[in-house]
Image 1 (tube, rainbow, N blue to C red):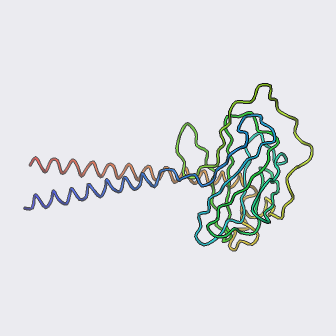
Image 2: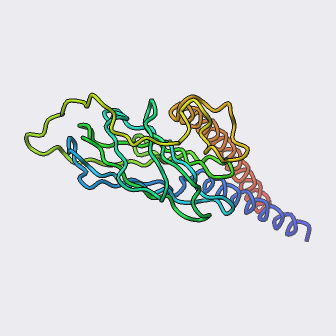
Length: 249
């Protein structure tokens, strides 16, 4: 009777440990892409291309008020012009990209806008790291770029490019900015919208600085999760071994 009771307890403990490992694995898995980009002409060196962005609303209590985007190498801030955006939203160039924002959208409403890029660079893919700021000051960072097929928790919008058209060549950069003036906050101010309460006044000087810090934090968290998963797997194996040996007794 005691032996059967002990076996039952060990079985339950092993099952609990196994379930914990599964939960940790799911928590470490990638989140669904909440920020996406598409192009009217997704070819390297294509000119006057319209890029359309969608940032999915995640908050149940606040609306998206601003988006800050770090442009990939090969696209200068002055080579971007606003084409379409939510009502009263404006776009302004920043040192590493642009900011677009205005009156906060209704809670649950996705932020959709499009820009025109003078020319896409000669690359295979372009990542547009994005910081989403809500009217309550919360910031969602979609800034991780997967490499070598790895999965990430907060993927940046990535545009895959096809080969350049025959004869396509890089065009000379413009001497004057083409971005539409905006009332959006300057890069050295907080990444939150001006009206967002609780926004930190000590935010980094650029979106890329915030992105770098968030990536480092994400890497540290991923390492911690890996250690926890390994410990739980070891516990599950130990319970299984004890149960097997007790069964032979």
